[in-house]
Each structure stands twice: as structure tokens, then as C-alpha cells.
Amino acid sequence: KVRVRAGIAMVKCPGCGTDVAIDAAMCYACGEQLGNPFNLDDAQRALFDKATEEMDRDGWGKAIGYYLELVKLRPDVGHFFSCIGMAYAFQDRNEEAWEYYSKAIKAEPGNGDLWQTRLEFALEEGEQRLKTHIDEYLAHFKDSSEAKLGLAESILLVSDKHNGTVAELCRQV
Image 1 (tube, rainbow, N blue to C red):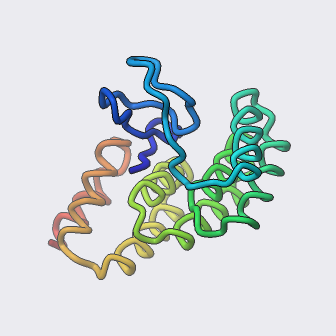
Image 2: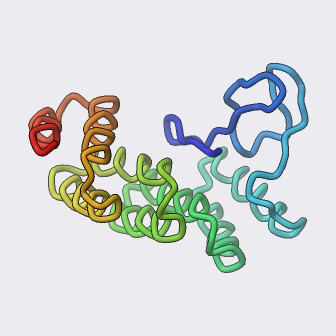
């Protein structure tokens, strides 16, 4: 299962359980060789490796180009759209970032990590983005009490600036 922590996609090492970056070839803690979480073929893996290298070097434009090639080949992998969003966000191109974070969710609507990544971006962007995110999240998860509480918890974990929003979600339960 892929998780996002501090904007980095992470997986658990099957050998020792340590969180490692998704693009790591080996676990730094135990040395275990890591797999291929997106089931990429060799050409796709090469693009992914190039995109990751560019992200590591702050080569946002080149990284976006590689990820755009990947989403043409694998539109089912929300992580690639999310990485494009992240690259745009690092360039303060927030409209494009929001667009690609949203495309990530459309690619994999059941992936909570993609929702969490967009939530973190929305919290930084302000009340209107946060409202849009909350409305879409609750619509997708059928406005359930569990979804409201989970969303309130996620907001609290990331920010203390939106206590009114958290209180409102909790009141609705």
C-alpha cells in the first residue's frame, strides 16, 4: 500500500517494515530489494526512474514531462498525476497543481493517500479549496459519519488553522 508522508510516496519494506520511498531500489534499514508497486514494464520503469531523479534535483519541468508520458501509458496510476501536481505546486503553479491532484483522485478514487495529498494542498491554499475538497470527499464517500470523522482527523493532523471546519464536521456526525 502506498502512503504519502511529507509529500513523498512511501511503502513498507516487506523485510523489516521500515517506511521507504516508493522509488527506492533497496531498503536502507535492512538491505532488502524492493519490488515494483505499480507493475511497470521496463520502459515505464525507466520513465519513472527519470521522473524521480528530476524531482530529486528540483528539475520540475523535466519531471512533469516524464510523468506526462507515464500518465499516457498508465492513466490508472493516480500517483503519477499526483507527482505532476506536486511538481506544479513546488513552482507555485497552484491552478495546475490542483488540476493534477484532482486527476489523481479521478484515476484512483478509492486511494485515501491521494485524497490526503490533495487535502494537504487544499489546507495551504485556503478556505475555498478546502471547501471544494471537503464537498467532493463527502460526496464520494456518501457523506458518512465515518468519512466526516476521518476527514476531521486528517485536518487536525495536518493543521491547527481550521478548527472551525473540524468542529463543523464533528457536529454533523
